[in-house]
Structures are given as structure tokens and as C-alpha cells.
Length: 399
Figure 1: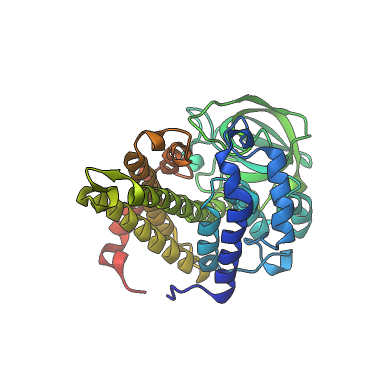
Figure 2: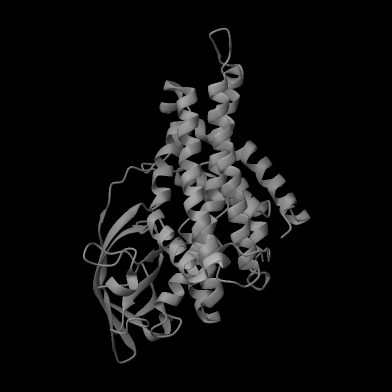
């Protein structure tokens, strides 16, 4: 496994760094640039989209046949990490969740006709998307195959959907939706994925759920599906292949989350380092205090561990493997390291870190959801334990 950057990845990282320094990071210091959900204001985002497009900093995740860069996953790691240095960065380059994961899925499994109808508007920044999966209790959460209660019944050439979903990220701003619903009682092939858009009747947003925040554009919403009609041509993959679609999407989305979170982790520690190098207490800079060095050293080590796990998982995906074990390890480690980095930085800056004078409190609030989204850390640890029980010592075998 080669850990050095490819020339094209290194070049994109340099371009992204320069773009963020010139156009994006200066916006973070003015609260007037934030929307009600604590994200970048929509009009500013559209201007940055135009600049990123003009600079060629777009479509990193797409294959060349769909107009993308044709990058490997190992090349996306440093690129997404670089974009994650700004709290607004991923959205500026159209690699933010949930669109990024949906782009990966549709690019891989949608038919050419579906890609033209549902994927390309997202790719071009003309539409946003959401994946509609999670349900209120007793419906599906971490176990969609066993607990999904939303149903899709085929009548003629259409599927009629009834159900109740919630915590659907980006739903209020989305035009296109990927829906998971139960189409049979088969324990392995009981779910099917569908595509629908905002303008169709038979569904509504019940409410935008208040969260600790900050939020992705479109928030996190509760949806009621009451007779939504979906033509069979808008079924994604085969009947009963819904869990396969979800596994394809979430495996990649979990890892790209890690890539972006590493950028935020490094940003938090960068802010902390700059502070302790000039802040004087008890006759010396804070950086000269042994206890401060311990805090920074431990956090920096965790970030590097997360980077290596993320890169290894990307390498396995590049080899064509599912990398379920490797992605789970990265997801747990990087979620923890993001929280550690933000917490350490706030502690070292004191009241200034807790205030909104820096982005640290934003990162800290955002970091708390990292251990929940796309599978709670405990679920991923269960997956790792299952691999260990099955593989034994081969869990750690050299490739």
C-alpha cells in the first residue's frame, strides 16, 4: 500500500487549500454569513459553487464516463480531508453529505436513464438529494432489514408507498429522494429502493426536527408517506435489492465522512497550536507546559491513527473489496478523534474556545453526531467483533 499522494491528488489539495484561504475561511468569521441552521448562507454558497466550478474543483467523486475526475478512493482521502478544513468546505465543492453518498450510489447502480434524470442535476449543483430510510420506533434504525415498517405495494406499473420516516438529512432542501421500503417479508430480500422527487403528491414533511446542530442544508426532517405513487421505472436496482443498495451507499458514505472529519480535526488542533504558542501564563507560553504538550500530542496521534485507518479502508475499496471491517474501524476511530481534537482545542483556548469567536464550538457540536450517523459506534464495534469471531487471528493478517 503506497501512502504518498499521487501527483494529481497533491495538485488538487494545493488548489483546494488556496481556494479555501481566499474565498471560504474568511466567511466563517461573520455570523451574517450563516443561515438559521448554522451552515453557510444559500446565496453565498451558490457564488462559491460557481467559483469552484470555474476552477475545476468539482465532481471529484465521479468516474470519467460521467464527467468526473476518475479518482481512486485513496486519492479522495487527501482531497476530502483538505476540503474539510473549513466548516463550509465540503458544501462548496459539492462533496457534503447526504448528496455525496447519493452521488456515489447513483453513479454506480442507476440505469443510464435514471442517471440522467436523478443524478446529473445533483452533480451539476442544480438539485439536492436525501436518502429516506430511518423510522421512528418501532421502525428501522440500525437494523433496517429486520425493522422496516414503511411498505411499497405494487399495483399495475406503480408502487404505492405508506410509511413514516424521520431524521431524514437534507429533506427540506432536497429535490430528489432515494427511498427504502419493504416490498416483502423475505428476511434477506424484503426491502427495495426507489426514486421520487419533491413535486410528487402522496407525501409531506411533517416537521423539521430541532437538533443540537449545526445542520446540513435542509435540516433533519420527519416525513409522512401516504399513498405516494412511484412508477416501476423509478425503482433503483432489483426488487428485494434495497439492502444491497444501502450497503453500497453507506460503506462509501461512512468513509467519506471520515475523510471530511479528519480535515476538521486538523483544523481544531491547528487553532489550538497557534493559541498555545503565543499565549503566556506563569511566565512561559502554554506550549512550554508539559501538560499542554501531552494533550496536543495525544490528540495529534489519534488524528494520524484515524488517517491511516481511513487510507487503508480506501485502499481496500480500490482493490474492489467491500472493506466492511476496515470502514467500521475507520468510522469508530475518526468519530472519536474528531471529538477529541475539538474538546482538546476548546480546553486549551478556555472561554474563547467555548465562545463563537472561533469555529471550535461549531466543530464540537458537529462532532457529537459523528458517533451516531451512518451507524452508531457500538454497531460498528459489533461488526468488528463478528469479524474477529469468524476470522480469529486472520483478523489481523497481512495482506
